[in-house]
Image (tube, rainbow, N blue to C red):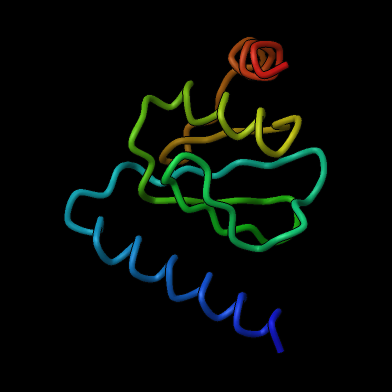
Amino acid sequence: MQRTISALLSTITVFFLFAATAASAASPITAQLAEAPSDRVQIIRSTAWVCEGDICRTNNAGSRDSYECLRMARELGTVVSFAVSGEAFTAEQLAECNENAG
């Protein structure tokens, strides 16, 4: 029962975070992780990420793209790919993201 309530509250929180930022939404970001996170919804420094397996997405990142990648790597582990508005980070950018997270 507690898991159900927790999942419902997480879903509601994500809905309101996305709704509140829709007018000023940043470019959509998609990240693939080396390992899928345990929870579908991840809140990393006030950015809500919705994950399906090892793929996580957000539309409301408030920081520079490189910082979002770094924060994700620190919180969730190795980032395999990271794309902003469909434009993927280079191998060098990904390496820097993951190296600086450690």
